[in-house]
Image (cartoon, rainbow, N blue to C red; front, top):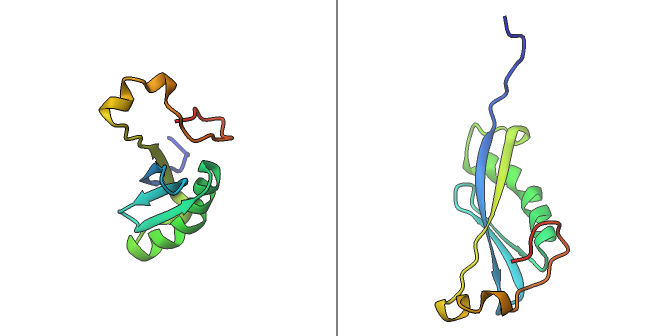
Length: 101
């Protein structure tokens, strides 16, 4: 007999983009109604984790905030002309251990 209790978790995908014009990182998760921005990727993730539980409770009844996961997907849109020079393009710097965009 298996005595392990499995607590189901709910995963929400947060799409992250960098708005070059404003110099801000933007996070969006339509499912829970999350839209926020910060000046660094790290601050953006922290902000998303701060507000996501309350948004999930409000917009997705039955979701346990203690058992929710956020999956951050960095979406990068580059014009075809710039994509051919991808290695020399200028991108925002990040202090994260994650690869810079």
